[in-house]
Every structure is written in C-alpha cells, then in structure tokens.
Image (cartoon, rainbow, N blue to C red; front, side, top):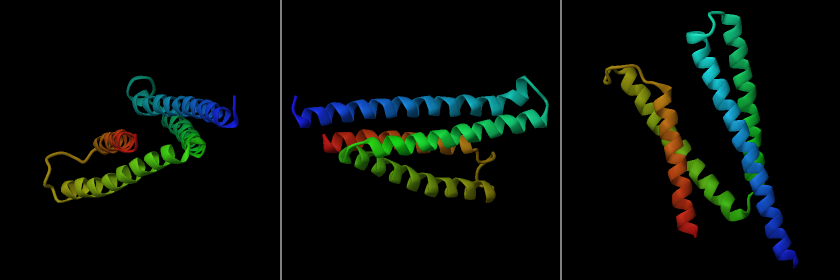
Length: 139
C-alpha cells in the first residue's frame, strides 16, 4: 500500500473510533438525563439523590462535549466543514426560534408554557438536516 492509502485507512479508523466514542458518551448523557428527569417521578423523592443524578448527568455531558471535540478534530477538512456548517445553522435556528418561542410564552400568545424539549428537537432536526444537505452538496 502507498502512503495515501495508509492515510485513508488511518483516517477511517480514527473517525470510526471517535464516532463510537461520541456515540457512547451521547448514550451515557441520554441515560443520565432520563434518570435525572424520571427518577424523582418513579424511583425516589430525595432532593439529594436528584442533585446527585443531575451532577452525574452534567459530568456525562462534559464527556460528550469532549468526545464531540475529539470527533471534529479527527475528521478530514471536508467532513469538518460539513459538520461545522450544520452546527452553525442549528445554533442560529435554535437561538432565533428559541427566543421567539420564549417571547411568545412571555407575551401570553401561546396557551401553554414554552418547553425546552421542543427547542431541543428543533435544533436536533436542523443539525441532522444540515449534515444531510452538506453531504449531498459536497458529494
């Protein structure tokens, strides 16, 4: 094999390892978030346990952030460009839509309270859409 082939294999392996690491940390964050949210509703009534569950969730979130940074650092230039463009769009949509949604709640234009879960879903779908569009654009 020549050096270019070795570099491609090395990049693929590193990307795969970083993606798996990010998936594990994201899963840990998701499970600890569910535990912190639903634990007090179905398993315990202690504020101390709830605080502990939230701290564990924050620690898993920090691990996820670090894994995401490592993932981005390990990508090639095109993959990194696609990811960063998708993140920029998701951040912008989240900021603009989130503040508009909150303002609708504060001004009593909407019937219920503004729920963060709707914003998280919007940001996630925007990010996924951005990645898919970026991959198609640069393919």
